[in-house]
Length: 139
Image (cartoon, rainbow, N blue to C red; front, side, top):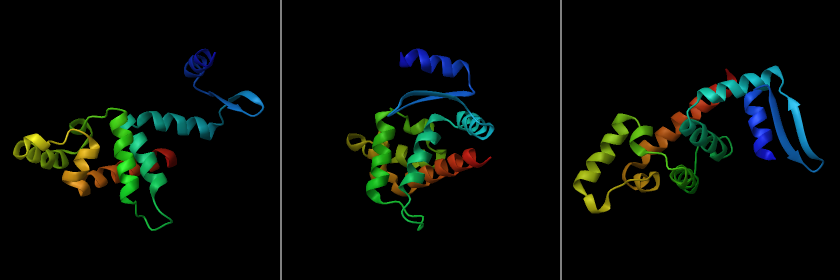
């Protein structure tokens, strides 16, 4: 049943659905919600997931994200099988590619492994995804 409802909501972009304690709910989106939904579609799936998780992980206004939270984001991206090369900036990928050439047996192929090689670059990319995610919500 939920597949039929989801298909209906995909065709009718101004409709959303949810389950609550009272059962199934279907409602028309407000103009603001519809605009936010359209902006989120413009984000790539990587920026949407990494940006949202990074935004949620920021600790009490300090703007800092713990190492454990960064690792959790990397693992979530790996679970969705995002490619390092396709989702990193060339300068960040270059450092990882160079490491992979020098250390073929310890090569980094996942975001979790890449954190060991270029932690700062990976965190910068997550921060960049957060900025794109934030802009998509505000614009």
